[in-house]
Structure formats: C-alpha cells, structure tokens
Length: 357
Image (cartoon, rainbow, N blue to C red; front, side):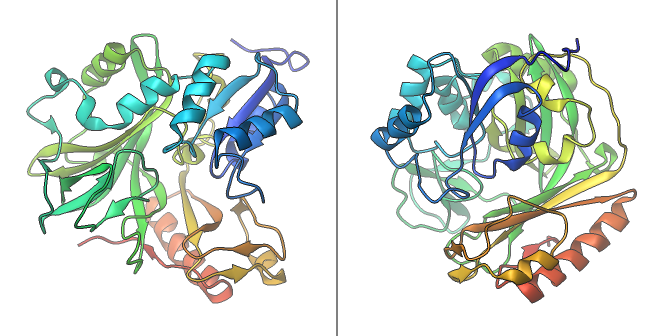
C-alpha cells in the first residue's frame, strides 16, 4: 500500500523521544504537522511534570485527534502516560501495555522454551547480580546499587549483548535483523549506559529466535509496530534482558536498509522492500564532564541530533550520535574505531566498549 505524495496519512502527530531526529525526518513525509518533545534537544523539559506537559499541549494547540508516537522519555512519568492513554490516539502499543511488557518478569512463563529464558532474580544484593529499575531506558538505572529502590536484582549474564529488531503486525512479525549492542567505557555511575549498536549477520549467532516463537509472543500480547528485544546467549540459551515494544535506537539501523520503515511501524504499509544491503552502525557520545559546544563540532561528519553551538551539555548526557555505513562487517568495525578516536580528539566524551571478554 502506497499513499499519494500529495495526501499524507495523518493531520498531526506528536513525537516523544530522546533523540528525535531520525524519527521526525521520516514522519515529515507522513504527517502534515509534526510536533516533538525531546528533553535532550530542547531547553525546556516538558516531560518534567504533567502540568508542564499540558502547558506544551496548550501552547501548541494540540488537539485530541493528534496521534501520539512514542520512542522514549516517559519511563518514570506515570501521570503523563495515563493522560495520553485516556485523551489521545496512541499509535502502536498503548502506554499501559508498554509499561506492563517493559518488565520482562511480567511475561507469561508458559511462553518460554528450554532455549529461551530469563535471568535469575534476587531480592537482595549479591555480587553476581546487577541492580535494575523497572522504569529505565538505555542503561540508566542499571548498575551496582546495593539497595535497589523501585527495582530488582538480576543475575549478570556474561558475554556480548545482542538485540533483535522486528515489526509486529496482526498475529505475526517481520524480523528486520539482529544487532550487537555497545556500552560506554569507564562510567562508574552508569556502567551499562547504551552507547550504540551495529547490524550483524544472523549466522554470527549460535542461537536465533525461532520465527514461530516470535509470532506466538506477538499474538499473545497483541503487540504492534516496531519492537526490539535485548538478549545474551550463554550456556546454549537465549537470556532475555529487555523488551522494548516501542520505537528504539535500533530503528536508525534499519531506516536506510528498508524502504518506508516508518510506514511499517505505523501500520500504513505491510510491504517490505530492502533498498540497501550494507552494514550499519551508530554511536552515541556522552559528556564526561559539563561541556559547552563550540565550533569544532562542525568537523565531525555523519552526525544526527546535533547540539547547538554554545549549548551546555551536562555530564553523562548524550551530546550527539554519529551514523556509519560500510559494505562489509570488518570495514564497519574499522570505521567505528577510527570515528570514535577522531571524535574523542575534539570532544571530551566517554569512549565506547566495542570488544567484550
């Protein structure tokens, strides 16, 4: 299904996402009006409270017919999530369902197989476990806190962290691809902070998600739209770490690989056309200390979510993302290392953990 270039699917959408550019660029082709809230890119944090959020809606004359498209930013904002569910059409999965499914321990145990399982839980701190918050995103709230408030302790699974990206539609799903995830180096406060990803060949994995299992999973919870599952492979098993029933950063990896991926996420089209077989990666750079962006940032190529000259970026906050493309995996890895080193010469930022023991 293809829409006329002169007739857009939506009159108005409100995008809520930390790192909005990749989504907004695609939504401009689909909606007559695209509003967005991105606390990392806007001076005012409109998600700080429900009253502040309503002020944004009133100032921009957002009608109750505006479609809400969600990426991130509302993990600990229950009041705003409930307000959106009750007053606006939410595209994809409603926030009540999103909140429930984001806690993987809410998933029906009957869905799991011998080779697909969850990491062990503990009520108390143990050196083999990591602390996680129920409402967290991108590795924030994951660490080594001995007392976990509004959270839990999960057994640490060693090895590379992967994700699978797919579009859920009706009773089945379309697998877009597998990815290897990266974290920052040497961040004592957020040791598992998400710092990027790259596409990998499914043959690089010892175990893959059975299509039948994914279809059953999607059907059981009536999930729709772009989703991703973070996991590790250990002891010949897949350990699920996180389920993201929403737009997530791995969308960046596939928007150039598939034609009109946002159309698929929104349910406007069920056609999937691969337009590029290259390998893709992105790296998110975080400030090591409070920094003020100067003109030197103009020498960095391939950026998205670029900050303004003169803007102050707080310690541990994202500065920008670089996007990388190569025809071979080994070329992609080489280019990743080159680009990371070049950025670190210009900006005081954290390094990225590309290799795992």
